[in-house]
Length: 246
Length: 361
Ligand SMILES: Nc1ncnc2c1ncn2[C@@H]1O[C@H](COP(=O)(O)OP(=O)(O)OP(=O)(O)O)[C@@H](O)[C@H]1O
Ligand SMILES: [Mg+2]
Image 1 (cartoon, each protein chain N blue to C red):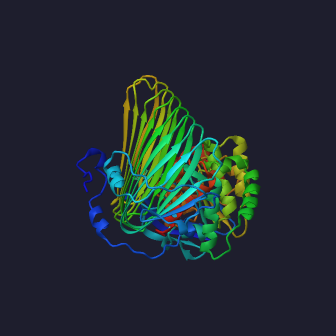
Image 2: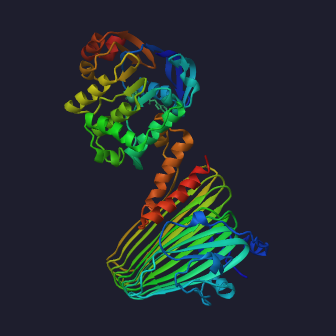
Image 3: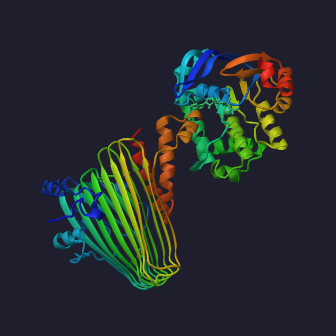
């Protein structure tokens, strides 16, 4: 479903991704683990099409479609979702306006009917409840004054409403308390379906007890150094990156 | 006619050089279509064309429209006093029957037009006035405001011209416990200068002078507000948000002065500008002159760009770059626009701003 082949990318002229190859099949969840600075967030930005991240080689396709040829907003409409490691605060724009604008922009790009106000409110109410964010919070400006954990839950609410085909979640489990981790993991699991895929970037084996991955990859210095089953995450936890990736 | 040049400090961001040429242009007497400028408010509707009151297009509801032969001493006021052909002289007493918000549409058809108005509210009286400027040419308007004890005035000014110049000067005096509130949206006009001097001369007086400047192309827009706290216990707000795109210039200067015995003054000044292009120019100049020691003065002035992280965040969710820009710019303007107290007026002025943003897409 998501095919990344020999991907090279630079940021400010500095090579960060150095021939990264990864294939995530439909219905699968893959985890990416790797040391700080390995290029995990860079990979997520390159996939999402952020300005300043220059692809210097390789290819990425989503359902056979050349993702790299599309501007960021069209990638989203094509079904890509990026859960940010550090969700952004936007003063003056409520979560409701943000998400409704996003949903309808995507629908418009796909040639679908836009959601009416009532339809949207119904949709978001269900998802917010499931993820433990009150409607009062969603009326507030995007992520402003939200705790770290609330910001991550908010990312999950957005994901649930936008229903992407491929979700790239960059450390969505970081900074969550134990209950929130369960809630977020449930959110990810609810998205598991034969026609969807998830790429879960994480530092902790713990989340993988709740969201059991099909594959675990170790990203070091901009490439996948090792891949394996869920047991690889346990091995990393015990032995560290240096020994496992060697 | 002599107008200040940019060599004078308080005028250094204004571009008045083209006014003589504009004044020499012939007027265009095509009948304007004003229907969409009226807000859905129950009150008098007045139309001035080239500074002349037009009874047939208006619904006065008993309001008197008289030429005001005096204007405040000021370079623009002097010209208005000499040349104004008509104006609004609004006087209200506390027990006058309610007339509802007064809407005025000023149409400039070309050439120069001058208008001098006067608003006097007796103790405890209140009034709301919404003025919309449309058309072309140079419109020069001045207004003298006198608010007695406990009077309340809400003013809104929309400059939605197709081109030309707009100069606007207000001199307001506010007695004890009286309140002067103004909001401006300046979008049309190749060049505009909108200036207000508000003097809080009674205890516990209130002033609010807010606005937004929306400049693109080669527009030069300039706002200058001065609040003079001359008595104790006064409160003032100056909240301006300006946006400059292309080669345009948007400038705001705000001055607060607090006299020695104006203790317990609470003055807030927030002047922020947003550059939508590196080729545009924005100026924001806060000035404080404080002679009293027991005062609260919060002030801030910034010139910045849209937050790149926020732009990317929106795009990563499916919003195209122009849409993301418009949404964030609108949020920026909200700091000033959301302060408009009358919901109908707030919605209309916000719609003006949104229309300006949409025009770029
Ligand atoms: N704008 C930039 N200019 C130069 N170097 C950058 C820039 N952004 C990121 N980098 C570098 O790219 C490398 C990869 O960063 P990235 O954020 O992708 O790492 P990461 O694997 O997500 O790390 P972490 O686990 O700490 O989140 C780092 O060495 C970082 O310093
Ligand atoms: Mg990272």
